[in-house]
Image 1 (tube, helix red, strand yellow):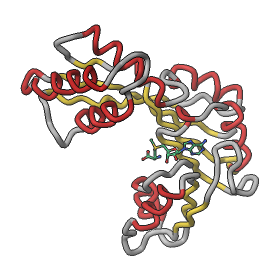
Image 2 (image 1 turned 60 degrees about the vertical axis):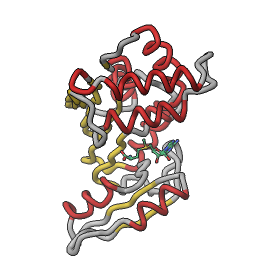
Image 3 (image 1 turned 90 degrees about the vertical axis):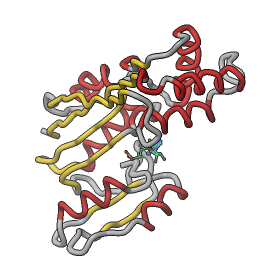
Amino acid sequence: MGAGPGFLTVEMAAEVGPDGLVVAVEPSEAMRALAQAREVPAGAAPIEHRSGEATALPLADASVNVLTVTQVYEYVAEVPAALAEARRVLSPDGRIFVLDTDWDSLVWHSADPARMRRILTAWDAHLVDPALPRRLPRFLRDAGFGAPEVRVLPLLTVGWDERSFAAGLVGLVEAFVPGRDGVDADEVQAWAADLRSLGADGFFSLNRYLFLADRR
Ligand SMILES: C[S@@+](CC[C@H](N)C(=O)[O-])C[C@H]1O[C@@H](n2cnc3c(N)ncnc32)[C@H](O)[C@@H]1O
């Protein structure tokens, strides 16, 4: 659900194999086009790409064994309604796998910590709930799921590396933040230039949280 460009979709199809089926649900036509263009290895499960929203999945009741929702619920306004919908489509022995980021876990080195705080506060507006993981155990329980297995997935880069998640994120923040919360383009560019200039002193740490729960 919220399959985006389809990386996990293809990996799941390879794991499931030709006797199964992977359904990739995604509301964005541009994302669906990217996912549909992705190469699928021989022997993989067939993949069906469908348009759909978290709170109105294009799937029949109890028709799904496993539902994966990675980096999606943090963009959804009505997470309890979305989890009720997830439970509807899962089979009685089905499981849900959820992954989201807690943006308060971000620890990045910077020459100007006050500027870093201003820019990250403006960046928080890129999603609905920047601190969703800490609320998910309660939301899952209230939606009727069993106690989740929870793990943390740290994303850590020491030093500046153009190929890292952190470097990609700096570019996204640079594009999103100017004009928000009183932060202008010059300030964001100075912030990004500082991070890129840290070289071996760069330190970029951010946590994602994984939840695996039974439908019950
Ligand atoms: C950060 S991307 C994650 C994509 C993919 N799951 C991954 O981990 O690579 C977020 C995805 O959630 C989708 N999305 C946003 N709001 C949604 C909603 N209300 N229902 C379903 N998907 C949504 C977006 O279109 C986008 O593809």
